[in-house]
Amino acid sequence: MKLYYLFLPFYISTVDWRTVAMEPACRKDKPKLNSTPTRGDRARQKSAQQEHKQRQRAEIYALNKVMTELEQQQFESFCKQMQSQGE
Image: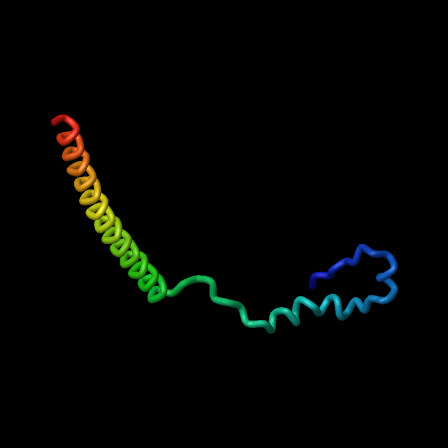
């Protein structure tokens, strides 16, 4: 049995030590949360992570394509501008 000591001297005379000793037992009545994931949870989490990575990869490729096209357009306009200045 664990006893919890109170370090404040004026509380010692008013504490019922049986109540203090019984506190941990009262806490055991509360349901514990199961923190370890089950196989199904792990599989769903892994599947969700894979989908997220695929979606992210697709977004990156789409953004890369748009940026490449924009860069090409800017380069072509730069080339036209340089040709018109050279003439």
